Length: 281
Image 1 (tube, rainbow, N blue to C red):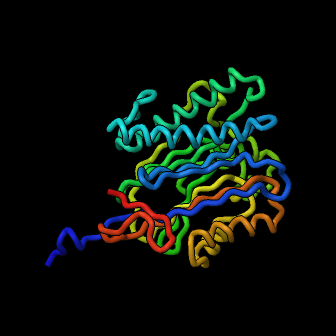
Image 2 (cartoon, rainbow, N blue to C red):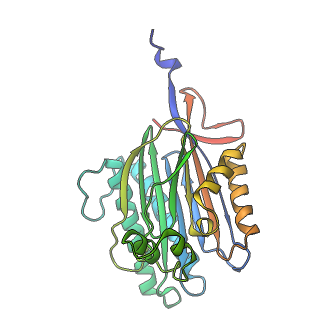
Image 3 (cartoon, one colour):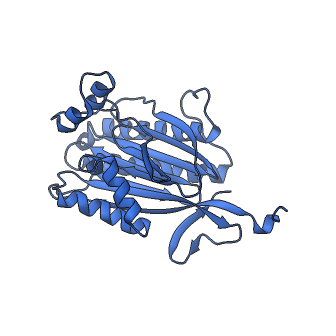
């Protein structure tokens, strides 16, 4: 016997994030943001002279959030650049938002001398029901934790990881390389950018980790899995990940944003029991 519509469950998202300056840097060039109403989640890691990295990463986050908020008001997604074949409407929107962020950062760098040469990585996720669209530019990452297994969903746009993919370096050699900070693609470095985009499906219980390279330089995948699995809440998991990195020296800023896919009765409100979560209709 089927349940009535009023007793059916709907997928929702719980989220928690944290960013830390680390043990060496004096300013934090990482930024993250999300809007549970529209299912958009972003992590950016800025680069550039003076405070330009902070400007670039903040622009990246702000432009993406504004894009989806305006789309909700307008009832349609703004198309930016040529659409890629074989992608969902949401994935195409994510690509457009990232292209718009790239253009904004590039133009700002061209117009303001203090911001010349600034750029930012980006990882972004758009969750609608059980549909997940992900995108990345640079070496920030998205991981999926499902049924006790961790999987990296994005590919780093970095020199050392490109050498690993071509067989010139082993993963162990890449982790020790002095060229780890050289990235091959970033928001704002060129007038146009094409992010990596993928459509996926999420299941109840899935956890997504979005993070800057300040985390992954110090923690291997099994350690990330163990830390998240041992934490009672997403907030505790964020704290545990960042504290471990700081205990190991943290010469970079470190940011993590965790999402958990859960089932909720349709009638529940967005904020329940102190936990932030979003119905995905």
